Image 1 (cartoon, rainbow, N blue to C red):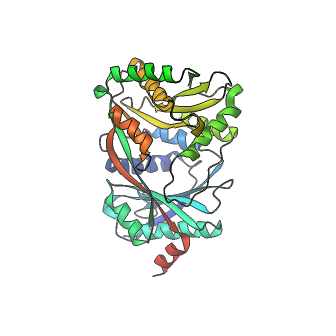
Image 2: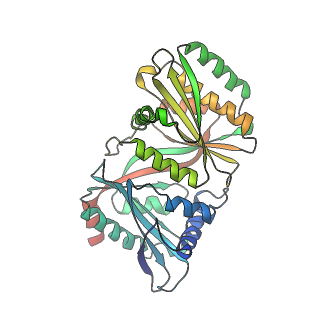
Image 3: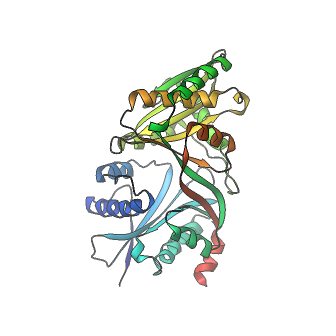
Length: 345
C-alpha cells in the first residue's frame, strides 16, 4: 500500500478535507466513546476555523494513496510561544486496521522535526485505556507516565437531590461571608481582568511528574477560547464564589453543554484559591451547579469530568456525589532526543 502523508491547514482548508478529517476523527471517537454520538461536520468546521490564534497548530493527514478521498490517520502538534517554551504537545491517531505498519513512526518523524525546529526539548501526549495501542506506543519510544487520571461520570438519575440541598444549606452557613454568582455564556467585560486572575486556578491543579510550567492566560486568550467554544454550539454556565466584603473571587466551577449531544454535560475545572479553602466553597459551587442542571437540563443523563487520580480533595467530593470511573487515561512525556534515538534505531 502506497500510503501518502501530507500537511494541511487545520484552520483553513477545503470542505472535502474537513469532511474526510471529521469522518476519521469520528471513527477514532467510536473506539474512545462507543456510547456517544459522532461530532457533526459543521461543528468540527466551526471549531477548526475559530481555533485560538495564541496556539500554534500544525497537522498532517494520511491517506491510502495520494488520490484517496478518505483518511486512515492524522497527526498534529500544538504549542504556545508565550509559556512552556520547552514543550510541544502532539496527537497521533490511526485507524485500527492500519496500525503497526510504520505510520506512527512516520508521524513521529514529522513531529520531531517541528520540535527540533522550535527548540522544544519535551514532547507531551495523552492516551486512553480503551485504545491500548496508544500506551504500547508510548512504552516503545521510552515515554514516562507524567499524570494518571480518569474521566469520571455521574449518572444524573442516581444523583440524590437531598444531598445537593444539604450541601447548599450547610455551605451557605459555613460560608456566610461569601456569595455565589452565575455567568451564563460569555464573561462580562467589566469583570474580565479579574476573571483572568481566576483562571490562574488552572495552575493549582496537580501536574504530577509532568515537567511543565504554569500556563499564562490573558483576557484576549479567554475571548479567543470563548469564540471557538460558542462557534461549536456549546453553552457554558460558570458559578463563582466571591467574598462579600472585598468583592474578591474565591473560586469557580464551570460546565459545558452542546445540543448535538444533549445527554452529556462536561464539567470543567472546579477550583478554590488556597486562602479560601476548608470553608465548604467547593461543595457549594458543585451543589449550585448540579441544582441548576436538575432544574434546567432535563435531557441530560450524565455529567463527566476529568480528574487526576492524585487530586484527592476533588475526588472525595465527586465520589460523595456519585461520580464513578468511566475512562482511564494517562498524560505521557518524553524528551525529544529520546524519540530521535528511537526513530534512528
